[in-house]
Amino acid sequence: LPQEIEKLEADLEKINAQMMEAGFYQQEADVVQRITQEHKTISKILEQKYQRWDILEQ
Image (cartoon, rainbow, N blue to C red; front, side, top):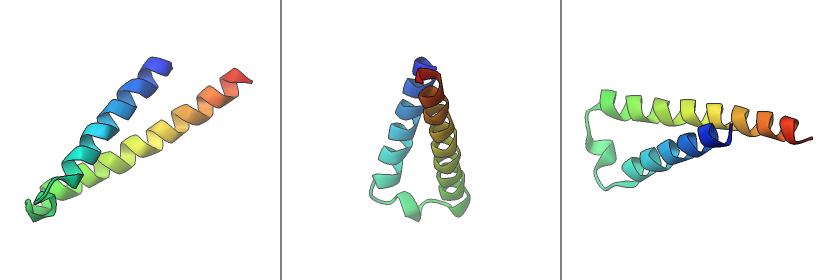
């Protein structure tokens, strides 16, 4: 589980960096939408992993 969380955090960090680049939102709409959706999906999965980890540590 910790390795999964680390990978998801790294993926999210990479996407955040992409989204902060100048001109990100000037790309084609489908590219922006895909990356934004990927960010939301990874964030949701990461939150679930954090919750699972909290439960396991109790």
